[in-house]
Structures are given as structure tokens and as C-alpha cells.
Image (tube, rainbow over all chains, first blue to last red; front, side, top):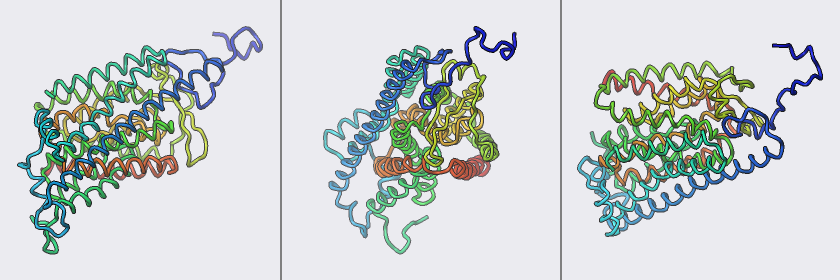
Amino acid sequence: MTDPTERPGSDTPPAAEEPKPSFEGEAVSGHHRALTPEEAAAMDEKIRKVELAISLVLRIGVVVSVAVVATGLGLMFAHHAAYVPIRGHFSYHQLTSRTTPFPHTFSALGHSIARGDGRGIVVLGILILILTPILRVAVGVLSFIYEKDPPMTIVTLYVLVVLIGSFFLAGV
Amino acid sequence: MCDCTYNRTVTPLDFVVSLALISVAAGVLGSLIGLGGGVVIVPTLTLLYHVDIRLAIGASIVSVIATSSGAAAAYVRERMTNLRAGMFLEIATTTGAVSGAYLTTLLPARFLFVFFGLVLAYSSFATFRRRHADAPLTVSHDRIANYFNLHGSYFDAAEQREIPYKVVGTKPGLALMYVAGLVSALLGIGSGALKVPAMDSAMHLPMKVSSATSNFMIGVTAAASAGVYFIRGQIDPIIAAPVAAGVLLGATVGARVLGRVASKTVRLVFVIVLVVISLEMLQKGIFP
């Protein structure tokens, strides 16, 4: 190895140009050279789109699930007059004991929602909440395909497969 | 045990409103330090409301996912989250969660509580020790981090500047993330308590980025086991509804705060909460 300080202005390439900070570390996998400013700008724009897409998916999941949960909760109180009074004699313990009935299979959930039962609608909202991170991983896979980054695409695809597999293993 | 203090019954409405308010606090705290809020939700439900532990754990899983999605929606948009590192490390957490589901019958829970209580005690110490060595790295010779380009930068609103950082220690990071996934499947706890130290101490991500990225990841780890909790009937709607709504509100608010809080404060709050969780786990293992 030659000491680069001994040969200033030689044909050795200059130390890789520092990428601009907002961009640093956001190139695709396996890139070993600094990107040209045009490439960097294009990549930056792509990454911004991906970030906004992932953020949007999470936001939609959150808003929809809160709306459904709130509707279900409202119906629960609307259908059961005994729940409402602040000074009533009906304790919440009757709703949170081991024996409290609530839907925890998909068929029971379907029947419950069909009847317009508040409990079923709350559970539906919670399931939407549970599905949100999984949907986010799916968007991640699409994002890395869009960024043309095969290593990260494989990584996220693996995560998605394991996640979906875990649901089947659980017997859902 | 009777909670008819002042000679009155706690009605479902009282329960829902009070639990929703506590959940808002859990959401703020969880989003700020990268945990799922289970540390607040489980003791509240079991000790204050005398709810069955199985239902409390089901509510805790709901709280983890709510914190994660609520906070991450904001953190990702503000570029606080390291998306690439988070998604890369999810390989280890999801694999850990699935293997944990198999191991759950093999290992005695008491032993696990003691073991992870000690692990968390050590990580709280390790996180605390790094309080003066907070400067981000400028070079990395970690081949995995360089290949997948896991480095990043974020805008620190407290310091009013963009802070670039390099990532190291992906191998110990992956190992710790695997354990984090394993623990969340085995013990039903949110595993942010292990994820934040893995990123902060082992991989040298800045504290706020560790917290935001942990928030981003815990939802996926929890979702991997949430199906089981639903089928086992641990998701009680009257508990889950106020928890989900309250935590989502709290996490959305908390996510607006993180940028403006000093890293040191985030670190100290995290260490205190970690000590509490560690003591809670040791207590469960030693005096069940």
C-alpha cells in the first residue's frame, strides 16, 4: 500500500465525496461509490415518497380502527342502559371476568357484527389495528422494489412471510 | 378485595373513562421512550382494577400495537425513524417471536422472568452509562451495516441541527433483537425494553433514533403474537376499546414531543422505566 500523502495530485481518486447529510445512509444496499448529485436528488425524492406512503398507511390504519372502536363502544353503551349511569349498581367487573362472553373466533365475530352488537364492532376495530403493522411491512416490500434494492426487498419479504406464517401457526 | 371505596360501584362508564385517561398517559410515555405502554397498562389493570392477568396481557398487546402505529406514523414522516435499520432488524425479532411460540411450553416462566429481569437490569445500567458518550459515530467498519447502508441522519429539534450517524455492531444487534422477539412471545411483554438498548448500546444509534425505531418495530413483533391472544379470548372489548383509543391519542401527542426533548432526558426516563420493569419481572420470578 502506498501512502497517498506522498503523491498529491496523482491519479488516485479523491477521497469519496461526502454525501449531503440529509441523504447520507439512504442509498440502496451495496452502493460503494458516492452518488452523483442528480442520482442523489432522484433517490432522495423516491425515499421521501416511500416514507410518506408508510406514514400514510399507518395513519389510515390508526384513524379507521379508532373510528370503528369508538362506534362499537358507543353502541355497547347505547344497547345496555345499565352501563351508562355514573352512580349505578352495575359493576364493570361483570364485563371483565374470566367468564364474560365476547367474540374471539371469526364466526362468532361475524355473527356479532351482523347483529350490530357493539362488542363485535370493537373487536373488528382492534383487528384492523393488529393488521396495520402487517400492512406496513407489505408496503415496505413494495417500497424496496420501487427503490430497486433487491437485498432489502428480500429482507422485508422474509419478515412478511414469517408474519403471515405466524398467523397460520396460531391457527387463526 | 373490593374496590367499592366510598360505598359505590364502579360502573362500566367510570371504568372506560378512567382507563382511557390512564391509557393516554401510557401512550405518551411509550411513544417517547420506544416502549409499548404495557409497563403502565398491566399493573393498572391488575392492581387497580383487579382484572384477570390474561385479559390484562391481551390489553397490553393492543397497547403495544397502538403505541407503535400511532407514534410511527409521525416519526417516519419526520425522518426520526431509521427505516432501513428497523426493517432489517425485524428479521431477527420476527424469527425470535416465532421460535418463542414453540419454546413457550419447554421453559418454566419463573426462570425466564428472573433471567430477563437480570438482563434488563444490566441494560438499564448499560444505557445509563452511555449518558455522557452520546456523540454519534462518524465512521463504521461494520460490513453488514455498510452493505445494507443502515446509516442515517435525523433533525434534532432540541439542538436545531441535522445529526448524521453511522451504525456499528449489527451482529450483537441482531442477536439482541432475536432475544427481544423471543421474550415478547414467551412472556407477553412488549420488547421495546430490549430493543432500545440493542440499538443504543450495541449499534450506537442516537438515543432518539433508537426510541423512534423501536416504536416502529414493536408493532410488528406484537402483531406476530396478537392472533394467538385473539383466539385464546384475551382481547376483551370493554378493556381493549379505551386502551386502544387512549393510547393512540397519547402516542400521537407524545410523538410531537420527542423531537423537542433533549436526548439525555429521553435516556434518563428510559432508564427509570427499565429499572421498574426489571424489578417487576424479578418479583414475578421470585415471589410469584
